[in-house]
Length: 288
Ligand SMILES: NC(=O)c1ccc[n+]([C@@H]2O[C@H](COP(=O)([O-])OP(=O)(O)OC[C@H]3O[C@@H](n4cnc5c(N)ncnc54)[C@H](OP(=O)(O)O)[C@@H]3O)[C@@H](O)[C@H]2O)c1
Image (cartoon, rainbow, N blue to C red):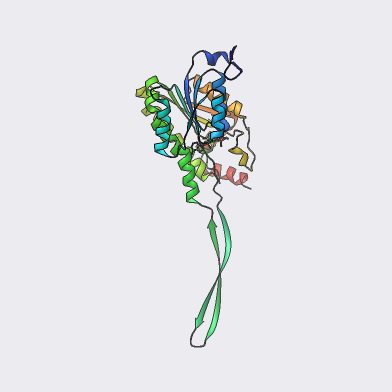
C-alpha cells in the first residue's frame, strides 16, 4: 500500500499502477462524487464537472481540477471543458450528470355548469355535465429530464471526443436498469435512459475504428440524493461506495456493459424480453 499525501488516504495497489487522467460529470453528488473521491485516493488526475460551486471547491481542496458548467448548455459545456483541458488528453470520461423526475398521471372528476337562456320565455336552464380530466403529463418536465440526462451527455461527448481520441481512451455513460421494462411514473426518466442506452450501444460500434472504447453502466438502485425522493421500496439498494467500486472495476476490466447488482438487473432484463402481458401483470401488482 502507498500513501497519498494529497488526500490523506492509502492507495489501492491495482489502481496506482498507472496514473490516468479522468473527467467525471455529475461530480458534486452521489455516484459521481464518490468516483471523484475514489479516483483521487488512487492517485489519478481527476477533472470534476458540475454546477455546485461549494462542493467543487471542496473537491479542489482534495486535489481535483474543477470545471463549473451547466452541461445542458452546449456552448458552455464545450467551452468550459475544452478551455480547462487545453491540449491534455483524457484516458477516461465518466458521464454521471442526471436528474430524475416522475410523471404522475392522475384524473379528476369535474362538473361543468352551463347556463342557457330562452329569450322567448325568459327562463334560465342550468345544465350540468360530469367529465373526467387527465392531468400530470407535463411535457416541460419530460423535456427537462431529457435535456439533462441526454443533453448533458451528448454535449459532454462532443467536448471530449478529441481528447479521448488522442489517448485511445474510454467513454463511460450512466444508463439505468429502469430502461429494461416500462415502469409507471418513469415515463420521463426511463425514456431518457433508453435514449442513453441506444446512443452508447451505437457509439460502441461507430467509435471502434478510432480506438475509443465505450462502456454503458446500468445500475439498479443506489442510495444518493436522487433516490432519496423515492417513496417506494428499492430492492437491493447499493451504497455509493459499492456503485463506485463496481464502475471502477468494470472500467479496469474493459467491460462494455457494467451492470450491478446482477440480482436485480438480470431478472429485469429477462422480464423486458418476455411478451408484454407478463410485465403488465407484474406492473399491476407493483402498482396496487
Ligand atoms: N442513484 C441511482 O439509483 C441511479 C440508478 C441508475 C442510474 N443512475 C444514474 O447515475 C447518475 C448519477 O446519479 P446520482 O444518483 O448520483 O444523482 P445525484 O446524486 O442527484 O447527482 C446528480 C449529479 O448530476 C449533476 N447535474 C444535474 N444537472 C446538471 C446540469 N444541468 N449540468 C451539470 N451537472 C448536472 C449534479 O450536479 P450539479 O447540481 O452540481 O450540477 C449532480 O452532481 C445519473 O445519471 C443517474 O440517472 C442513478
